[in-house]
Amino acid sequence: MDELTRVLWDYACRCRLEGCYSLEMKTMREEEEEMSGRNREHIEKAGCPAEELEKLWYGLEVIRTVDMEAAFTCGLRLGLALK
Image (cartoon, rainbow, N blue to C red; front, side, top):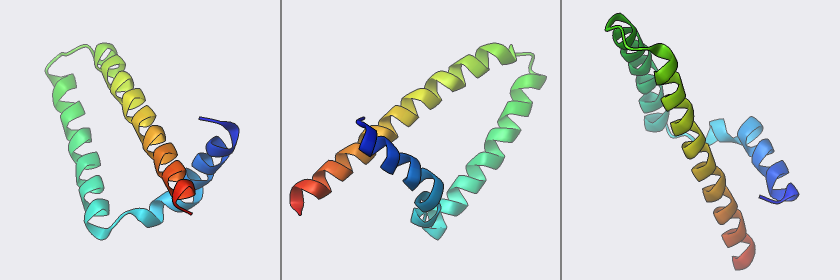
């Protein structure tokens, strides 16, 4: 990601992303956050090592973030190419 795209990405994440969720997406996101908290509690009660799960979660989060950045860059380039 070049510097201009990085600036636009940071701005979009801070100032514009929230307005891009539909009501259904907001509801789904809230439900999943709640479910994730409950699942974390169940896993901890089961005696699973939290550190290993945190490493797994971190790796999946990095993959998701990289994919989101690539999609943003692709959309920006596509928009610029169509103008």
